Length: 448
Image (cartoon, rainbow, N blue to C red; front, side, top):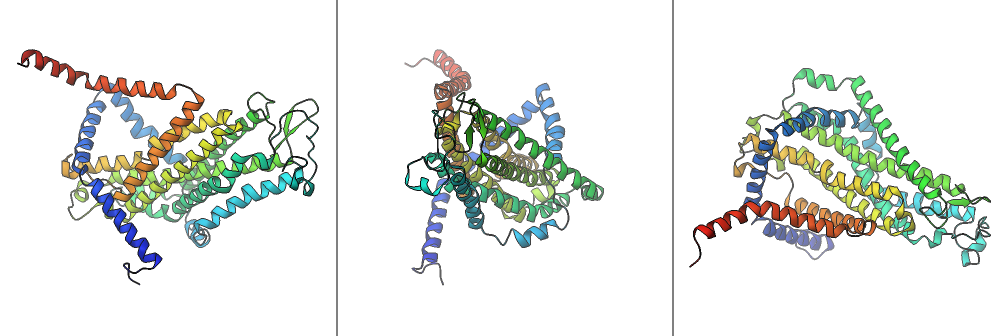
């Protein structure tokens, strides 16, 4: 079967080739400008690092930040990657998508039917379910079939980010030993490489990973449940997983126990996927730190052609998609009555931090080191992403940023105006020296 035939596969390949040509056309003009911009930013960064403030930043960046991430990022014990490769790899993306849909949508529907909070009394399906114990309560109730926001989340959004969570975790477990060897052989001494392979070190990293991730889950879920159970203080309606006592207090009903466990498991998966990406990123950063100028100046070698860098770029795109899907999740969540809880704001800030710092930092560091070893020449700059990956990540960044600004404007009216005014002030401040010189030239050489 040739790519030019009239089959679905042929038409798909033709469409992708046309998209690639469009990407190349859009990317070709600013390529030299990107190299010059990266060069100027690198020189500016070096100048800042020579100051006292830069010395403190550099000290933390070289010692504290990598040490903390390396200590917390998970490691894979020897042999585990083969086990996962035989089990998880055989399960496709859609298997995890529909599995998550079953646990989130189908089981919640079944449990609410048993608890009497599936649909309001008198509706068509209410005769098949248990009686609602809160039906005599005069307060506002929200049954499962009325909770449109959560139904949409459980039907599409949550299964999507769970599937990407597992995709990233699977990628980490099956490839992390290769990434580690890639970083070790880039220039680290034999003693350093062997020290990292000690079982004690691996066990400590695994223990630290589970402790930290579990603490994050406990703190977030505890705060979230406390906000929900406050009677009318933050969330007005009594949700389908809540029961109102005779004294007016809110407690979790039989569905609430499962709801609590389900949300804890979802958050655990999401934080684990982020930490797995960080673990891969740290090996790429170690490679960038250990690699010598001989390889960087090799004209026959390109970062884009290296299998490990290509795999890391794939993981980066997966993380960008995961962040975009999670931003959609927060956006839908913020429109519901549950959007007023403190976790919505905390999730917004955490997502912005992940998008702007944790995801791009290792790639930028690798490109900076590569550029530095090529003496910051204009032709020495190399973007590790392909053209398609670059435009895809840009589109996802703009989507996430737009959703976050919209949510922030809803939560804090006037936020967008403040952001716009700040951007105008930064622009005017940056252009002030240029405008001053321009006015000075006009005063010295007035127009006739």
